Image (tube, rainbow, N blue to C red; front, side, top):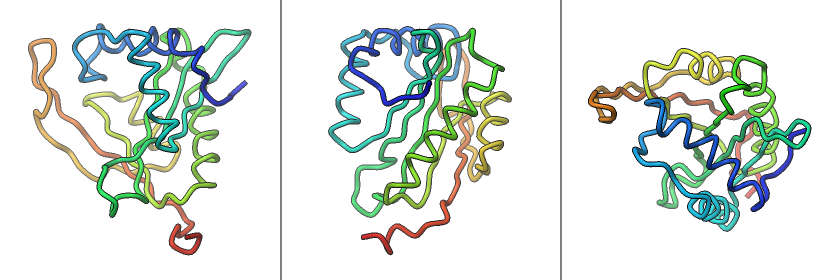
Length: 169
């Protein structure tokens, strides 16, 4: 089942996210976050009309995806960033595709023209997922992050949505 995030999900989402913080280059955070920090992020997104979804099976959250403003300045209001994190046991099982399809459906009902994903490189699985849903690589920044004693590149993937949000304003 895919559903909107609840404040009660904060601890599990923090657990999923912290796996990436402590074990991978995928997140550029270097210290685990608390449940309260995750709760604050959920509430912030809700306050700012963000979209957060979780995929749950048998009361177990297998992953989450969200869409938030890309940049704060008003001219960027039609461009949003999308992000996804899966529990390690959910990887390679279609969870990411299902979550992104639901997120794209929710995004299609909002005044959004472009979505962007920022991916720490290399990350073949994430690249494959984002390209599967129709995103294309539009930028590559070399050595912009430093974690675990190494420099990390970042790529931007983008998808322009077919609807023009200015027609809806």
